Image (tube, one colour):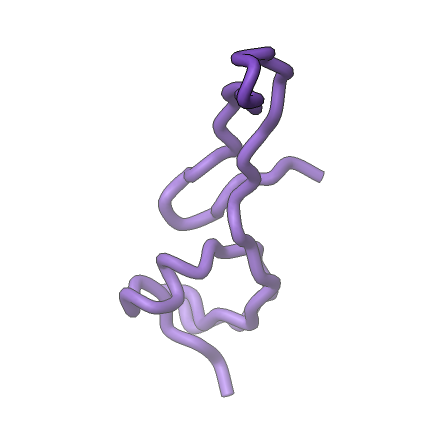
Amino acid sequence: MAQVCRVCGKKPVSGHNVSHANNRTKRRWNVNLRRVKVRLESGEVRRIRVCTGCIKSGRIQKAA
């Protein structure tokens, strides 16, 4: 399953681990996703994968 936020579209970012000797190895920063029950605009309740930034900022309406 793709590591993508369904609200903002945030995806993993790639870069390097850099050691003290400046050796570089590839690494990846994943998005902090949570499966949340959300009430959509149509009134339907569905589970979607949302990043914690969207949850904290109130971009989604959680279903009780």
